[in-house]
Length: 262
Image (cartoon, rainbow, N blue to C red; front, side):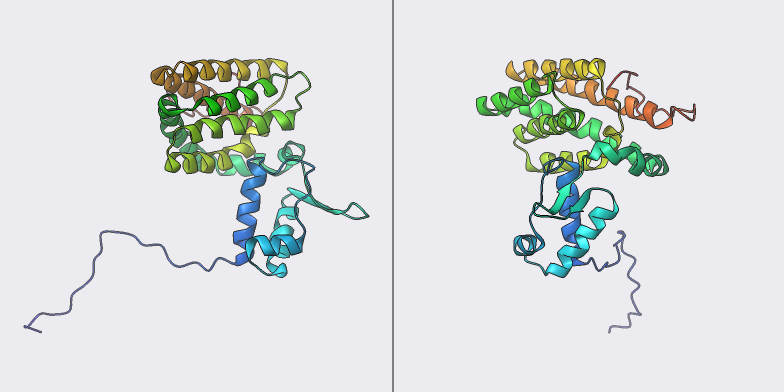
């Protein structure tokens, strides 16, 4: 071999080791995301094991294992009787039990999500102002108006908030941004579900969403980006305050984020 010695491969990249993900984990992940993003709504009955097996192209055993994981996390419950089945539990019902300690334990990782969000979501709003259609604007306005209804429950309000942000992301016309923001919401929704719910908070949130809608309606890209940046920065600070209020040691989230209500 032309006198060449053995070559040592010193690759400038770190590869991840192969992990064997079970089919049930794959099913669990999709169902969990749909529940956390409130695309499957509270008290809604999900399809039977047999139907889910057809939907996912998997065995009923794999589906059963995935449902057991969801039940263990307090995301679903099985009900017996003539109208029995598996039903989605309100996320805000058990969030105080399920999320707070875990979120504090993984606070550094959540900080990274906040930082990522301040980069991605304002840019999505900037693009949306240039690309949003009249139909998308109409749908966004419907979500915002529904959230102002005095009869709007906490769970419905949180579900509408998700749809408002995902609608703006989708209106950006960029599939990568949309998927990123879905991922972000999956990570931060458990924290948002811990936030208090009252008329003051709802009114403030609606004012922010209304301002964003008006900027998008004017096709004002700069204003849309600025409003979104302010809105999510306030959200990060509010979550931080809520997580650590009992400990009296509230960490800073984003240097540019003003402390405000969510």
